Length: 265
Image 1: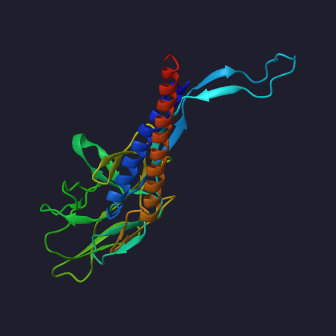
Image 2: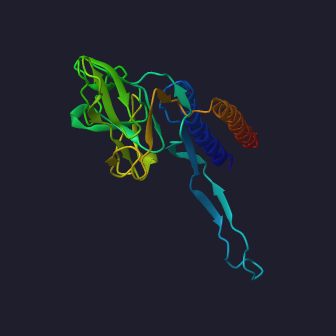
């Protein structure tokens, strides 16, 4: 009956509303360094089986097809896209871009470790390397910059060198390590350009940049957001059109039910 059509269309409106939220979030972060866009995945709902395929029909033959009426759609999940974002040249020695796989590690609440692709580091009042956001998450393992440092250089393998007053040769003060995951799409985003480990991502494997499958570091650059504005705008238009079509389905089902109700008169 038309009731099933209304239910299917209503489920589509709910799913499309979620897709609209995801696309809007992607576009809102088009200028966020290290941001990774998300994609909305859909799946169909259960089916009402009105006739099974492969059973004997009224003339003794095997029915070649069945009769199934679906009950709509739902969002099965959002999938993070960890494709490399374009390079953004800043010439700031504390801005670091990961070329390849891997995440920076920072400390968050309760002694936990979070992971980020954003490499916009600054030095806090205690001389520690931290992310340059409103919370100032400390890099892990921690790196201390001397107060009298005149220049800072970060090599491609993550070693941090500083030149201090009165010394001609730079000295190494720390090592930036990267973490990789077998399934980075399973990481849980928590805001601030940070992700935390989940059972879906698996445990991290840490080590120096450039080793095994980890990418290398490039100082003086940032990884820009990997959001493609053109693609997102196309998705917005497609979502809007799909929303309108399903709204029409609800109107058509409503008119059908009205016509059935008027048969009594």
